[in-house]
Each structure stands twice: as C-alpha cells, then as structure tokens.
Amino acid sequence: MSDLFAIVPAAGSGSRFGGELPKQYMPLAGKPMIHHALAALCASADIGTVFVVLAPDDAHWNHYDWSVFGSRLQPLFCGGKTRAESVLNGLLVSEMEPDDWVLVHDAARPCLSRAQLARLVAELRDDGVGGILATPVADTLKRADAAGRVARTENREGLWQAQTPQMFRAGLLLQALQQAKCVTDEASALEALGLKPKLVESDSSNFKVTYAQDLQLAELLLQDRRRKT
Image (cartoon, rainbow, N blue to C red; front, side, top):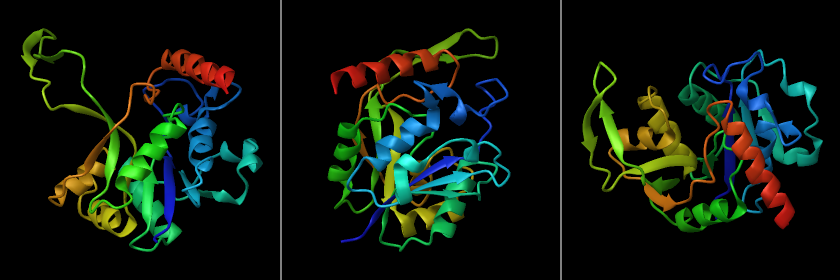
C-alpha cells in the first residue's frame, strides 16, 4: 500500500487579513493559527509526515515550540510566490514516490475535524483520481455588475464550495502543477489535465479564516470541541 503524506503551504503574507504578523501565525486559542491545522493532520494515524512549506526568509517559525508534533512534522523553507508554487516546491523537495498520496491543507483552516479528515481518506484511498472536501452551496448567489449592483441571480444547482484537504497521488499532482501553475487550488490543476476529482461532502465548520472577524468564530468552535472531549 502506498504511503500518505500531507503538505501545508504557509509561505504567504496574508495581506487581506491585515496586521504585521502573517495570517498563519495570528494567535488563536492560545496557539498560532497554523498550529491547529497541523494538529489535525498530525493526529491522524493514516498520515506519515506532514510537510510545512514556508517562505525561505520566514522569520517566525522558529519562535514557536513545535516539539509536540515530534519528527512527523517537517518544515521546508522553499515556498514560492503563489500557493501552486509552494505546493510544487514541497513535492519536489520532499521526494515522495509517484504513487504516494498527498493531502494539501490550508494553514488557515484551523477547524478541520478528525471525522472530516477520516472521511476524505476513506473515500479516496482507492479512487483513480483523488478528490477534495467540499460543501454544496446553500446561499443564493448574485452576480454583480461594474457598478456594484445585482446583474443577475446565478443558478446554484450542482455548485459546491471547495475546501481542503485536497488529496491526490503525488506524481499526478506534480505533473498537473508543472503544466498549470496559475491555479487557485490543486483540484483546478487536475481539472486542467481533463480529470474529474471526487467531491467528498464536508460541512461549514471547516471554513477558511480570511478576515480578522473569522478568528472569533474559529476560537468559539475550537473551545466548544475542547469542552466536548
């Protein structure tokens, strides 16, 4: 059976978030935000090594104690200017085998649950392409015009909101990213090869922290989980 690894691209500055500290290091429930994303991955018995792809000049990583994760966590200071470049560089440096599975997870999704992660792995282990966690779009979608007014209402039937982790064979993902570097997620790169990643249903708790107010919701969710364990 092939091995399973994880890559967390964390070389960005989080410019939309604001503040001097990169978003992945913003404090959340007593830890830097990225700590919670890494904890979810490292807690999985299915995943061997978790690679964190950092900017070459990252000045923050070594200010924190990551010893709780032991040798399963490996920082790689080879991040690029884009998410796709960082994941591609991580694949090249980590030297995974082509048939190995790799899960790419956002550093800014701190509320990934064990159940969500286990479902993704279970549904994709024997899949020919791989896939992603996602949720069906529930809200009504409006298309805006240049003046910021509603141009039309979009049909949401069949629309899903992509999440992470996104799980693919390392060799296939490497090929896809080398050919289609201007993509916003790994599934888009596979789609550019003509492949159709599988949608594994998740829920809204696995949201991406994008703005400062999202931190409050993430903290409440993490605190609630702690009380229930």
